[in-house]
Length: 116
Length: 106
Image 1 (cartoon, each protein chain N blue to C red):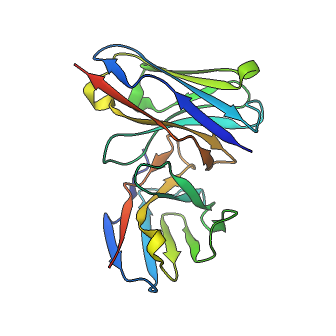
Image 2 (image 1 turned 180 degrees about the vertical axis):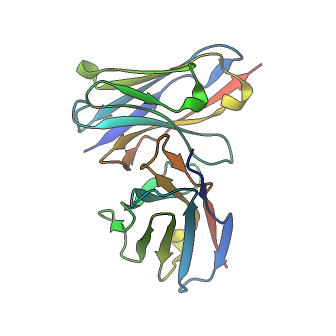
């Protein structure tokens, strides 16, 4: 069955770099796109960016040049890296599968706190 | 960016019909989708492409709309429907979500 699972740190220091891995199963990264979405505590959802099945990427300009998404198809993993973290980057980070423009499967998310 | 506007909260009684609206700041054609999120959980897909019911989702849920005005309807509402509902568009870049509508049962 289709599954996505995020792994990453619980705590990141201010101005440091966040790295999260999304490991997928039940589908191929060369067939489906995978996106990153985040949710600050008590707030709504924010689209961050995508890894397209062809290997390209797309980013929300709100993250300017801080965000990088990559993948390792042999390991069925998609990676998020974001630098210069601030306290308002404290959020739960989700990866989600894109099935023709909508998210049909989501990971459980990883809660990341940025600490000063 | 395309702004999606939702009412912040609604309160209804079990058995009633509820409509949750989502208004887009510009046309999104029919690339509008609806998700349900319960506290501490990931969102789950309810409706895709404005009006298509996701497999396994009860037929009490339905969606309609095109362009800038969209509606999610739950009829009848059940106690388990207590959750926050988000709309999301994928017509314009960047993809955006509405602020969410928190549904409470009386």
